[in-house]
Image (tube, rainbow, N blue to C red; front, top):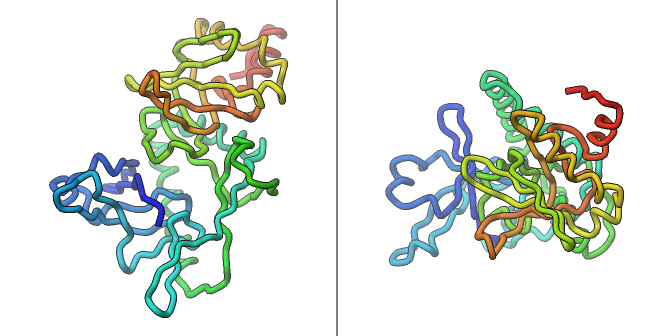
Length: 293
């Protein structure tokens, strides 16, 4: 079974993504027990922390005996008659469409700009959807289902695949990224810090609560949108004219070895949002001399 690196911690109407390395026998017993759940989309499996004696680094998370993963979950295992489990091989890698990326960026910005009261209302709506999902998946459904993993890196696709409408891209504040996000496609949120422009690469550097992240733009990004090469400087202009500039990006999470930080590589031209606007729209607004925020 694939290692479970993180979990959703739920307590008093609050949800938080925590890393397995933040858990130890003491805080699990006092705080996390009975409150950890699978962090994969649409999965509601309850998780427990298993301690390996003498080596805490080998401790791991697993589901509770009577709390199965959703059949579409990456961690789903199938029971067979002889008691042996086998991991689901029904995971299909699918290229995220521009529409899915744009929808993810829009939703992330909406959540970022909400008041705490509005966020709580949204969380309550999401909880009701999860509860409905649990009820729908509680029956014995033996039909084979396909798990979809959305990606933006063309190299991740072994073969051309059609997009799926049923999957959602996960969103992370940059200070909430964990090792389990590396290699996965995520929509990330941060505040503009600076633009690093070299001959080889364009980097938008963002910050959130003392955490830093480089948003890097791959060759596929500029092949799809060559006009973007000459307008990145508008992000700096916009940031100087506004108190805070929210940057959102959808791409593949990586670990930057030289800075010991996470980074995100953007491949799709729809994968960057400057305070809710595409860079090309920002250029158009400046050319017209007005904004619509």
